[in-house]
Length: 318
Image 1 (cartoon, rainbow, N blue to C red):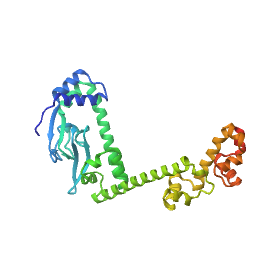
Image 2 (image 1 turned 30 degrees about the horizontal axis):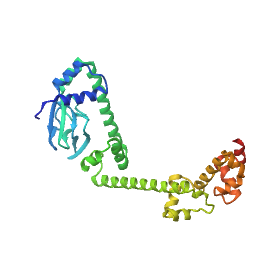
Image 3 (image 1 turned 60 degrees about the vertical axis):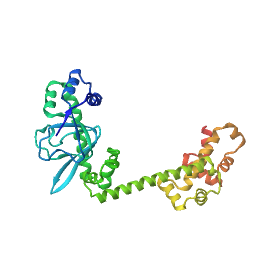
Image 4 (image 1 turned 180 degrees about the vertical axis):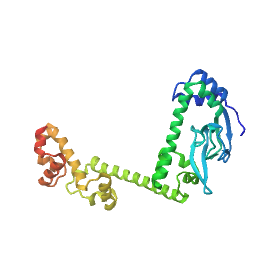
């Protein structure tokens, strides 16, 4: 595969990334300038065939690579890596044994690389190289183990959520048939799970918007002060179905309509009780009426249930 010596800015780019892991000696930096190579490969190019020995450790400056193996005449994607990731054969690291997977370019890709022989020489000469590589390999294999675990035990939805959460932006960028293969599902299954997730996000956003409207109506418009406020009145005021409104209270707020509204009424009363001027002019029962409670008994029962003590005991505690 044709290659050139890496340009200085390419090496500096890698060294800056590695320096975030461990300080790099000037001698090791110089060795990187001398030993680092640069590759440009087209989409579909095979960097390593299954059964061959890996010769290089790659860094993806721009583009995407995948690992692929064949099992029972079926092509299986084992991993996909994009910009700013290091890539080599997982099974045949350093080329000690033949690789169990091919490495193929998913996009037109620019790579910075170092030959395994040069890597081994640097390991023997520089401690910082050993430490850097150990950290990289630990992350590499940890990601591989985590990926293989979720694929073995997770259902299709769990595998999909794992992928989009750990690899943000990949699903929008990569061919979905390759993503489906890596997640061990059919393309049709991936499309179905993706659509369900998008609908779920849309539903969550819609619910969030309705919650905002409900709270604006109750708090800013002080609708809790209406003693005859009912779910029907609120639904009509907000132009939402009673079924949808009830679902939001039960599933999102996890409160009944009365508990939700009375909570704001009680909070209003508690704020009023702190104000000496208000308490000079109002009785506790008058505050309850002003805040929307229709009866004294409803107020006392709701207050004690929410606060744990009677309104009078609460007032005396202030």
